[in-house]
Image (tube, rainbow, N blue to C red; front, top):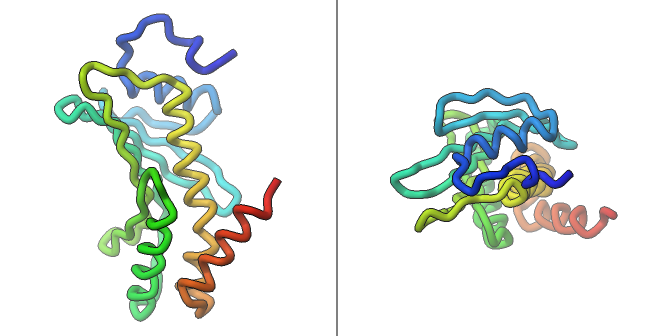
Amino acid sequence: MALSEHHLEDDIHPIDIVENVASHHDWDFDRIGDDQIAMAVEGQWRTYSVTLAWSGYEETLRLVCSFEMDPPEDKLPLLYDLLNRMNDQCWAGAFTYWAEHKLMLYRYGLILSGGQSASAEQIDAMIQAAVSNCERYYPAIQLTTWAGRTPQESLQVAIAEAYGRA
């Protein structure tokens, strides 16, 4: 059964749809409030914290996929260089590092202005893309911050891995 077949009405709150997607995948989730949900999505490299929040004022469904990271202070300039290079390759969404919270984030906003609604498939694709991007670049981040590789060398691993999987 397609994810969208669970919905018979057009006017369903986006976070309700996210909750159905999380249930469909058997992801652990917590409905933080009417407009926010947090879930844990297991990847190959680690478990990612995925939070989606609805802003009715901005008519935007915001997604944040994060994981903890505490790079050495002297590696931060290389990490920021790597992030710029990673973001050049991401057409939807972007990475950022929140040093204060020691979190690597992938962020994306789905604008649903004019009363538009998101489908379950769209939301599922958003979550899958966020986790896939984190999985793709996780080794590059580790190589740059812990293995002494340059951002250019580390990105080659991310590119090779993306093309090397079936």
